[in-house]
Length: 244
Image (tube, rainbow, N blue to C red):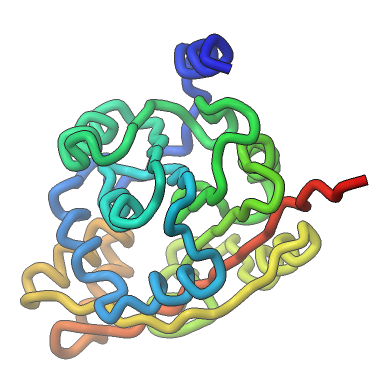
């Protein structure tokens, strides 16, 4: 097991789909992370469906590790995987030994088979059709009875979903949801609030999330320092081993 682990950790990360927001503006994205889900609705839904206390957790596409300390507060172990080298270094500095962080991609996870109880991916890689290699890798590293939890933005809910679809006209939320349903996932819609400390932060975040025209429209449509954003929580469990 140790030798196998060393081999997969040493492997080259698979080609990643760039995330322009956090890759180019990690400090602004840090402020965005602090504003997202201000009332903890996603964490509450996750804990209800896949409680992770005492378990081994893998966060795929962990970015600079913002969510890792939350898992580490109760999990037996936490591992973050991120393809972008500068974010890996930021994540390692953030967790300061609370978690392991490896460079790698969702389609080539640097973990052994059956080594995680929960695989978590939040707005990281999974946009429906095309993510099959990532789903297969998550299945590989999960233990029997473990869960894959994918948290994605719900583009059917305004105002954020309307702005998102304006920038991604080919993105079809219904097609994505049907894909996950066919793949055996449950789905829950999770309403949240993004709440910012001031207008300057809100506007900076919208400008790294959307093209110039859409961002300026979103800023004009938003009063105050908060707006609703709805997510989808997709969960699939790996079949447990049945005793003969």
